Image (cartoon, rainbow, N blue to C red; front, side):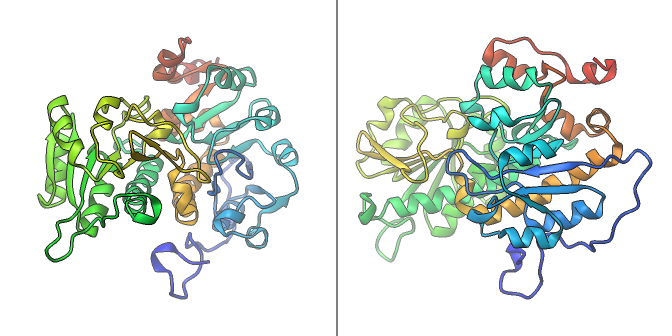
Length: 406
């Protein structure tokens, strides 16, 4: 199994470890970790690569993987079994065996009925599709829910979000380039120019991680790149990182109306951490864009930042509005399922090990600020103020809940 950055070489395994059983601390708790097969949004990723099994088993834990969970990311059941995981036949069996479930998308449909009392659930939350009923179900069961979108380390970084956003930014430009082609109904232009022919104009809404990596990729193709944001500091930093090879402007109505009608590609990357994305492009401006232009709303899983956007799927990824091709697939990193799975594995495994080492989820949340920040339901309470405001529900401070033992 190759390391993505070293493909073609003979080094094996995504996590370089010596699979020797580590000595257990007195407070160590054996975790029974379940990795189900993803059921929603044509998800191709899996939460943990086979290499994670050897690390977790060596640390005294058990890993259960549903049959076929890694198939769409090209990880076989045999790879998981050889690394030390137990492959189980059904999701019902997996959920019943495990005290911790780690998955990519939030449980949906029949999965909600499989959740067990007081399980730990680590997954994405997908704010654009989350409902009050989902929250109520988790709270009724006393689930500890930890969301990828909220896990924030002491340095302020969002490790899982950043990795997925890097992938999203790069994919957004690759996808836009494909849909500009004539056989996809686009304008029939290339992102980069050739001698005597100017390049395409790519307008990126948002100077965060998605915007940064979209800009890097678009520059690599040779496009003319314009980045708009409401944060002047973020624009200044991005100009510095990219050696002033981009054009920046404030995302005011004036600049948006000036930039979009001439754009060949618009990448929606405007978002607020832990909140719904702000809608910054009204439909009337989309209507002024050229027919055959492409919009990729890369933050549609957070609600989208363009008024005409609506979620699409990998099997039907695009639609047209006002003659403009819209690509609005919520789980874009699923298109790079293997790379994204390695990224998730590298971030999640240390968290899983720490939960086991300290002996309880209560202690793990107290000691690890990243996990504590990531928790959105705990002991039958909603613990995220932003979610409480979104759904009109009460919330309790996570630190007070942990300290009080409620």
